[in-house]
Image 1 (cartoon, rainbow, N blue to C red):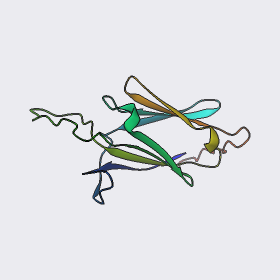
Image 2 (image 1 turned 180 degrees about the vertical axis):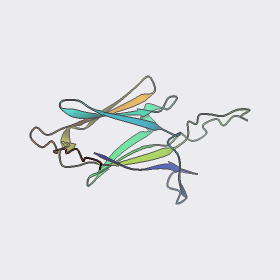
Image 3 (image 1 turned 120 degrees about the vertical axis):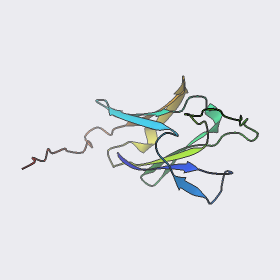
Length: 129
């Protein structure tokens, strides 16, 4: 599994204007277990039904679009956003795309990417001269 890029949608859903943003919109941590990659998307304050997870070829896309009429206070200090975002990741052939699952609990979207037994990619350490 490889990280592609972080995008934050600006404007209405379907808007053509997309800005590359830092990971402040939805930070993602990924760890590997014996039989899966586990992706944690930190997105507190979001509404579960407004997340969307799509797979196009080997590209996994996780997005969030807030509902229409979502309140926008007159901020004095703003260090956190509950706005729209799109995150994209490339999956390799070791991921069983038919068994991908997700759940949203306590502000964290957890996406489980099961590994096909025997398809784990080999790793090699490169020595630095």
